[in-house]
Amino acid sequence: MYLSIIAAVAQNLAIGFENKLLYWLPNDLKRFKALTTGHTIVMGRKTFESFPKGALPNRRNVVLSRNANLELPGAECFTSLKDALASCKEDEHVYIIGGDSVYKQALPLADELCLTLVEDTPAQADAFFPAYTDEWEESFREEHETDEKHQFKYAFVNYVRKA
Image (cartoon, rainbow, N blue to C red):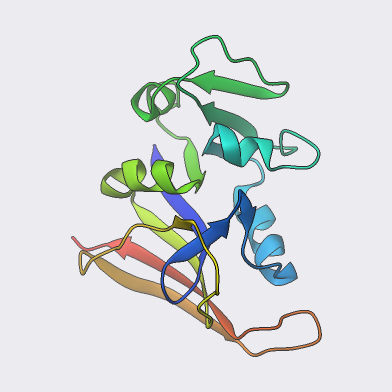
């Protein structure tokens, strides 16, 4: 199994406020869809509940919840990240998509970080990406300027774990 973490992260590592993304970046959403389609996405229950139309199409939706009896349409539910990952096949590409507690649990296990680094520090945030240390090295970077659809500069940056 190959484990990637995908997130849009502010300069102070903020990722959300009141169960909503901090940034509406159409190019980030397109990248998210392109990378995760056809693969498994793992998320916490609150992240799943933030989707306006429920389970994301053309992906295996896996939801983590302390509630062992939870049933969500279009999703498989597990009570731990360990159990969720154990259900994945050896050749499966799995994306961790949030929220902050799931990111914290997954970071030590991840092979890759697919981050959108936003040049901004939001006034309000209550969810944060865990600090990632020098055990990661940049493998890809694509810088983007502001435009009519993107209020902030941002960069798509991938990191792989150092050997």
